[in-house]
Length: 503
Image 1: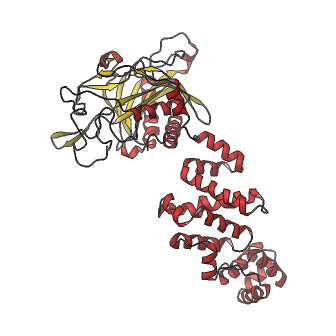
Image 2: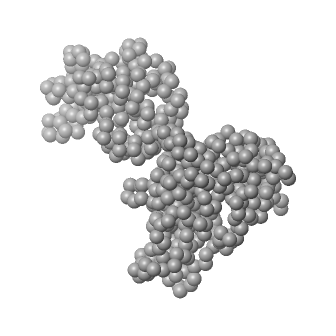
Image 3: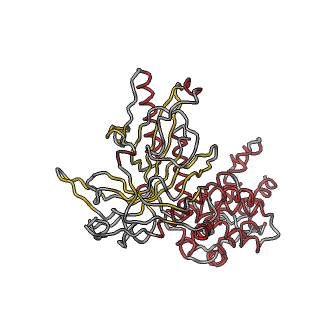
């Protein structure tokens, strides 16, 4: 490539609180009845005063602490002035130069991305276009919206997507937001600029593309030379994030190749045409005429308050990855499955806790391997039929551990285990009860198995001849026939031994 892409992200997250940011209206952006969760405060009636939502502030600080941010003990809200139909006050209560959190980082597998700032603001309403008319629904107006701004540390669309995916996982572990992109709870905006590689050696150049959209940056980081920035607004899926950035890099590269100028502007992503489209020239901070919000006093956070929030932070995704790999010696794929699916990972650990008590005579690594394999395949496939909560009610960790113990002791085969697991899901019964009731216990009587094997040998003369000629696959075929005839109840090791003996 002739150009170095530089990418910074601005990510908006709807916080999970009971009420809106500055009033007591219900925080429910998915309310189907237009203008139902509204009041004089969030619709900006004259004489109303905003009261900050303490829980929204706590969740913002919690996110900042989880991302190693500095929490400012003195903070304030500001008015961001612009006029748009879905903004009832004609300004948005946001934060400018004194956000709650700044100078943090998020560590990915291959790099560390610096966090410039995390601030809190209120969401706007929603415009609904119908024919020649536009309607305004203020149910979403005033919902607590946390905005995170990164430094321009990303250099590819894939990295940007990975960052957004990891951030969503952290938000869910913290419980601050469901971060469901399909519901608009997490919205990504990307700032992209290109610079010819030959210009990278110039270190004392003017910063042309602040990741914070021109806002005052409390990061204190050293400025670097960047190209002209283009912002892509409201990307509502990880796929869109990756595709929009890739398209924009290609578009800007072609302009520069032709000797044309890249215009600093805001663009949108057209999902149907798979391209970015111009929306407006990019505003700078002075265009919003920021000034301190006069109706909300300065906010002071004491160290005890901050420490109390810090004590609530759970084990985070990266910590969990490292612990699972160290404690259980799991392979990378299983570690990622149990990290990405937090409830599934917790279920696995409950099962292992039971197995540690019951099966001290079995090698622990063997237990881990069998349990994780069954949980990430057969058990996980049941997710399509039920939630993890429903699954755990029907198949308790104790019962699942019992199933694994039966497999490890050779009392049931893998094929039977799958049948038993499905029956456990259907009935909620424990595995021993199902095995007894359905007659699924392992066949260990060699005389009974030998009788069936002789019958299979007589029916499959060609396979027998093939095996005698050295074709090992023929033996596996015969073993499969025996297992089918015994409905999976015959012990595979005994079947293999007797087949070789009798042939």
